[in-house]
Amino acid sequence: MQIQVSNLHKSYLDGEGRRLHILRGINFEAESGSSVAILGASGTGKSTFLHTLGTLESIDEGTLYLDGSDLTSLSRDQAAQFRNEEVGFIFQFHQLLQDFSALENVMIPQLIKGNNSGVVRKNALELLDRVGLADRTGHKPSQLSGGEQQRVAIARALVNRPRIVLADEPTGNLDEDTSAQVMDVLLRLNRENETTFIMITHNTSLASAMQFQHRMENGQLHLLPND
Image (cartoon, rainbow, N blue to C red; front, side):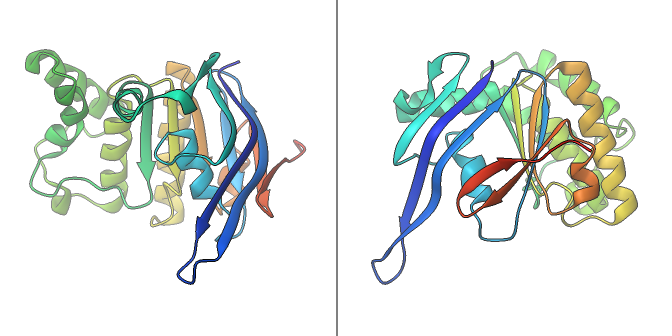
């Protein structure tokens, strides 16, 4: 078992000081190398749940384990190291650095780790080739299409060979054909690298390509039956 979540709760205070209970006792498991889609209406806590899995946000109650290690016990520095080394994030807005080329954007996570720049460049070039951007490495984000920018974000998320990739509406701003191309890249890399892939989406067609589908309702996750 790779990820195991038990009785996870998360709440926030609104502007008037009222406590909003967002996640209400979530139980969730994901095997190593699996692909998981999380569906649900806006505002149901999907992104909050993804952020807690990636240690971007703390939890109020419950347990969160990765291969038996309790992630809720990590210090701030340990959590930052965990995110850099073990988790790749892909967001709807790809958040590329506009002044840097596609290659430089992909290189940054490994450079942060202090890896040799020559090795980092080689790894980044290989990943950009795998996502079909071998001829676009020197282009800045403004010179790339939306689909190309998202593929750069995918390469960046994978450059440290993370065990987990967390994607929040990664195709939300793309047209249908480009969305399908991006999903093909993600699922191919999921299979080849045996990376656990957890994705939030509103698109039931894209979700059906994943091994498992869950729906977020009333602050809880419900496993949907496979068709």
